[in-house]
Amino acid sequence: MKKPIKTGVIALIPTLLICGIALAQSATVNTLRGVDVNDPAILDDVHRNVEGRMQRNYRQQPPLIPHKIEQYQIDLRTNQCLSCHDWTKAGERNAPTLSMTHYLDRDGNELDQIAGTRYFCNQCHVPQADAPALVENEFQPSANN
Image (cartoon, rainbow, N blue to C red; front, side, top):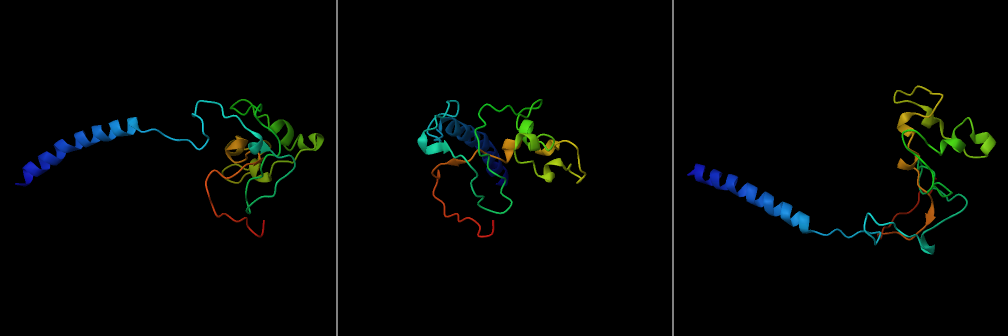
């Protein structure tokens, strides 16, 4: 009696799998940006960069970037952010120096150059913009920034 049930369940699995794949392929994804992922998003006046520094919302928040970075190259060979913010150039460029944590390797050893784990700046830092929230939330900034 148990063998026919087991055989029936095993035969049903591929059918359900194929139906699930077909359903997933037919689903459409709506974006919050309002345009297709491959299309460029046009920024309007609502989503403009804000000059000057904005206050952080919570302790340990990575600082926001107070300038445009659209043309900045950040790849395996070049990090244009370092042309101003590296500790060797920040003073002459009048730019904030990177935190010392950016010069520590995984084991906490100090390095003379930026650590590979901190090389891609825009994985943590984003340009600041005065933009409305995409979804409703009740977030309140920390009182002790």
